[in-house]
Picture 1 (tube, rainbow, N blue to C red):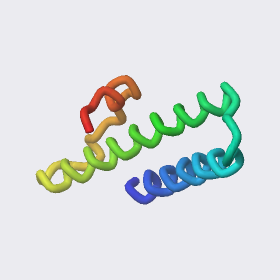
Picture 2 (cartoon, rainbow, N blue to C red):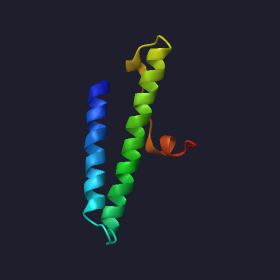
Picture 3 (cartoon, rainbow, N blue to C red):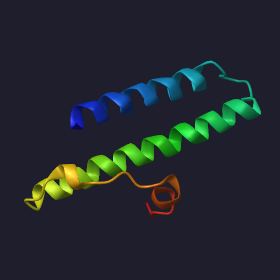
Picture 4 (cartoon, rainbow, N blue to C red):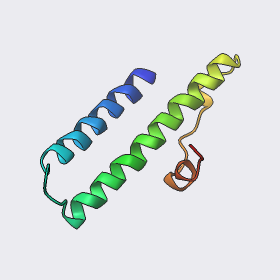
Length: 79
């Protein structure tokens, strides 16, 4: 499961970078800005899930008990 999450994160980061590189010196369209924001939320959700799995593993619990949280939840975390 962790390997799949890391693979998905890599795919999303690659898409994010491709979108950013395609518009160096140019403004993104509204749809592209929204996609970039959506990618950021998706990445935050996957990283949160990986952190939950790691915490559960370190606590001696089943990492499969971790649950994916909504974008609203992960975006409200303090950095």
